[in-house]
Length: 71
Image 1 (cartoon, helix red, strand yellow):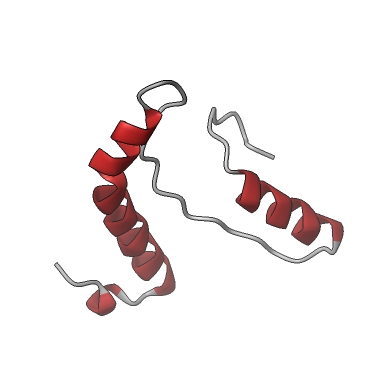
Image 2: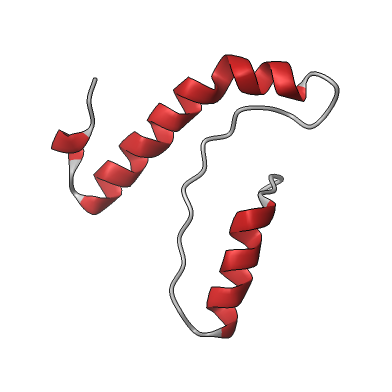
């Protein structure tokens, strides 16, 4: 299901599997903040706002609502 990507998101994976089993379309937009490892929490703290904003912009663009994204 990951189409070759080397990322994980356990919650999204579970929902994706449930949707696949029920033949329901599924899309997840995730902002990647950190690598797995001892520095992960610090990386997450450092990059979370930027990743959140990027995911919000991607969703707004996908839905055709670019005007909803605040700069």
